[in-house]
Image (cartoon, rainbow, N blue to C red; front, side):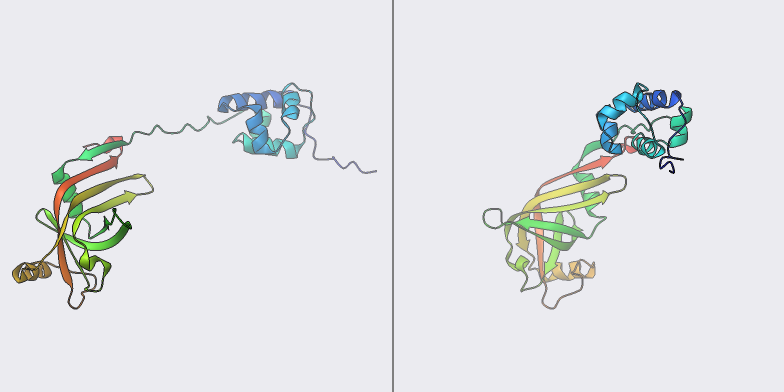
Amino acid sequence: MDNETAGTRLPDIVDIPRNIRRRREQLGMTRAQVCARAVLPPKWLVELEAGDAPLTRAALGGLAAALKTDINALMSGAFDAPEVAAPDIRSLIAMNEAECYARLATHEVGRLAGGMDHTPWVLPVNYAVDGKEIVFTTGPDSPLAHVRGTTAFEVDDVDRYDRLGWSVLVIGVVEPVTDPVGIARLAQAGAGAWPGRRGELWLRIHPGRVTGRRLCSGSTRR
């Protein structure tokens, strides 16, 4: 009868169990962790590292994957150095008001929030910075048309690949802009809606508090 394990059993090499144990310890992994990754019984790994358990190429392949290496390395003992996670040297830095306004000037869309006493809401608005004020427009039938009083306005920018970014929060009072000269000046400066609306209403936020933070890498802290 043919031997069903022919070609699957590894040579009886004493160094393989020793190499498996050395690699596991190099990675700082327990036997339970290795076996969970390789889907193997922990008791078997205990016996294998003691040189008392049989080892097939399929099982060795599972161990190699669990130990972040390959079969040849487990057989020879020539391991690459384990990957070491780079230290997180990012810094969260508070921005002063001048930097907050400089950041606000680089964007055109933010989020306006209000209604905290009743039903909370957050709506996107395109905006412009006019001196110290935030100005935006809305249609007469928009939920924003009747917004008055204290609101929060937020703008942020995130680099999700490098996990860096910044955020600016403006707490202030929303009031309508009714001066025709002021409206004409703002419209000429291109501060209107995307796209322009018929009969659009102009509003401004008088800031009471402007705060911001930025998350930056250690090499660009300034």
